[in-house]
Image (cartoon, rainbow, N blue to C red; front, side, top):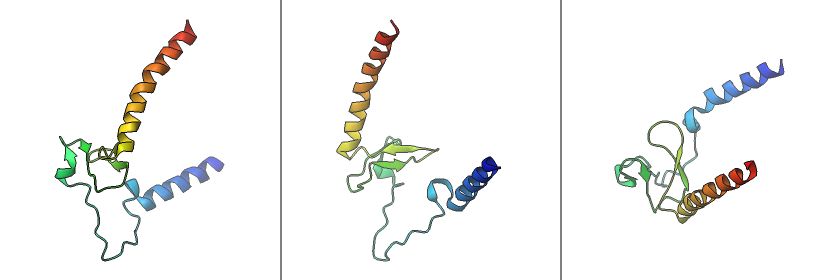
Length: 99
């Protein structure tokens, strides 16, 4: 019973909001310029988003499902370097634990 209620609620929410919130009405001011994140000039090689005027760290991918980083933001580079640094350390630690 509870599972059915949860599934029905999740479906209602998913259908009502759409993929990535595409059906959510936003209250933009008429004078505010909307940021077009799909412009080719912001996508390097078609896969890397680089827009210094966009304050967002993460933006929706251009194709498919998921998110990508705005590589014009220093926080995106710090996250990438941090992950590249931590993953080998984590693998080394797990190897040490298993031996």
